Image (cartoon, rainbow, N blue to C red; front, top):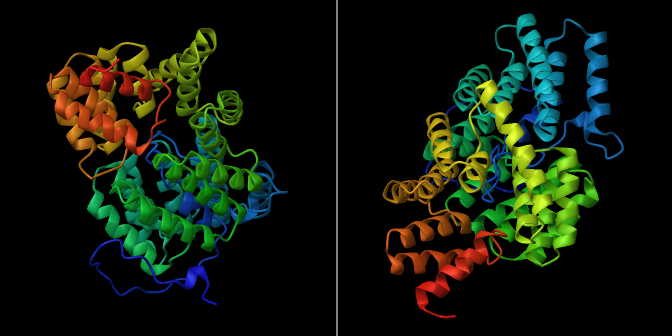
Length: 455
């Protein structure tokens, strides 16, 4: 029987350049991690700013050996081999993954220190450290820097798939979608494994072909070689099901992933979304709370706050919003770009004018479709609907099937006095996913009733 990894590489584009490559074989302790560390840095088309956990390193692949133990083993290795650049790079990459899943800025600093030490030991052709620096930059939303490191890693080893994944992620977030597809094709041509298939899935998801995206993510699941890779694929299969309004399948996929990785924050979020869509609000609150305990990321805090608000639990929702405001204060002090959830939160629960400013700064660094959508919503909330409509065109230019994007455009059309266009977008949003948001989905139904003149 043909193994999943022996299936042909998916065709991402109708044609792709295939350069001759010098083959270079590397041990894969950190490379496997790099394939997943920055994938979907801003999430799948639930379009939250930070995605769920990527595949573990080989050191942390066993369910009995958690990430902390894996990092401890890597720390012991650099003590034994203090002049080995690969050992330092492996430690740096593992720390990037830990920081990305726990939102711990201090761990990012430790990761950078380890990676730069590796580069001091071997300044040239240090593939592991170059990939690690690209992953670190992407996790910090420094996508131009991630692009530079990916290109450097590819120059070091054109036949290694991992740098093409970092390159694809950076190009995607910089709005260079066709170039990102070319990088994914290169990666899949080199090795159609779980990481390249998952990125191919995301390419089709961005284009609105969720059927093809699901098929490729199922291939990624079959090809998964570690528990982390399987959990990662199941997270995104759950997300794809939810984005198509299939909450029951989304729940099954999330629970299958949690059976592998019970503490994974991304899977807890996926199950929370499924529970909420199925009307199981108590279970949804519990899962969001557990995800926040693991990683207090903005998308979890905002999702829980808005769910609590939809339930009439004002004090509980305000508690989440207070944490978000504190995080925003720290972000501004650090001069870091805002993520999309911070912009949407400010637009809906703070100052729309400030949200516009945040979005404009974010868009200069990251002209990705989700940032265009957040900018559109901030402009709408600030009363600048004509400008907002132009940004919704950018957000939906790829044909992405996002109920939230469609709702935003529908609300903007309604504000501009175009009920026909508003009706079309609002109906399509609810057709894609009738439970896409605890506050905006009911608002979409209310708006349709007003447009149609029904009680």
